[in-house]
Length: 172
Image (cartoon, rainbow, N blue to C red; front, side):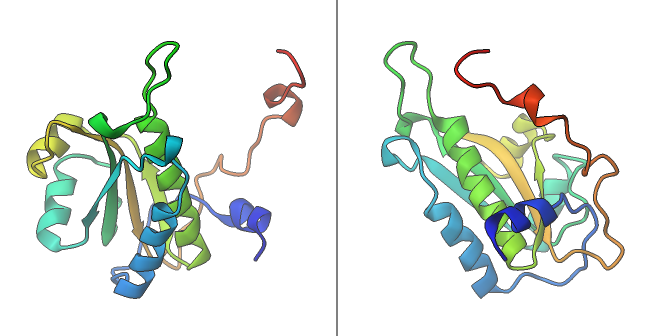
């Protein structure tokens, strides 16, 4: 499948089977994140694999958007390892972690694994439940599993604003 077809067919899965993701498939998804570009190749991303029942229960205490997925990846970054823009000090961590998460999300889709990008979680609860060190910043949860036979996209998934509203040439 070519990239644009993959991007078009992928949707946020909110209903999963209980089938576990095998280690080879998980390794391929993680490799996609590993290969993702980061600012100055600093690679500040840190990924916590959540796929054991005890850890999944912890996750359920941190967000209502777990969708009973059989696995999740908590995508974080190390605050002290990010590149910083000299003009204003903006750090690359959120962006780097988002690129990594996107690569993994698309690889998962290519492998038939459904995902949903979740930002709706309590960071303090995540930090407490998973003993996240102070220098690690959680950015996104990528809940994942095999889509249930009756899984469907969010009703507004196929609605797009006109391209002309989103793209400009040379000036806004």
